[in-house]
Image (cartoon, rainbow, N blue to C red; front, side, top):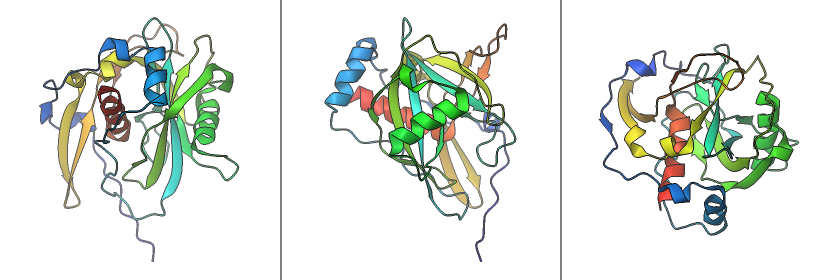
Amino acid sequence: MNFTKPLPKFDPRSIPVLGIDDHLSGVALDRLTPEALRRRFQSPPVWTPEHSVEKRFEDRQPAPAAVLVPLVMRDELTLLLTQRTTNLSTHSGQVAFPGGRTDESDHDAIDTALREANEEIGLPRDHVEVLGTLPIYVTGTAYIITPVVALVQPGFVLQPNPGEVADVFEVPLAYLMNPANHRRHQMEFDGVTRQWLSMPYIGPSVVAAGNDPSERYIWGATAGMLRNLYRFLAA
């Protein structure tokens, strides 16, 4: 019998903050330019990812997947993120990178990430310059994710898929690469102690005109992969 554990039902915003990592230095601004990122991925340093495998929430067949980490080349680089709709079976309502499960027709993880970004938010492939990939990240829901980091040329017009994406927004990369904005949390569920990061940010939508800025609660797998990007750029 294939037994599936229920996913936890809780508001991550309600879990106390154990600590803030303001003792760590942020990535220098001169490392957060398109040219500096190109050089870093062309000649990567020796480094170790901080987050790679979450404790499992359910017993299910692992599934390969990929996400796009899209860095928009504005006056300062910004990261394009999505707010998932609340009707999805996993990670509903959460902040996420555009991406998803690998299809048999995909050539590789890069192809998966680009296809999913186009299907989810209408991001055209010809606006995307892939820089490289980060180490695989395994979620508690058994997705084996390859993060694909890319530069995105501005001028695109997004068309979010309403069945998957509730909103799209951008966060300055410098904000996310500053550990003073990284908060640590811990909770026990089903007899297992689980730890994660959050990176709350207040910002407006990029697809809904006139919306007031609102809190974007970046946490879990998305925050874990961003922490790995921080370690990679800070190394």
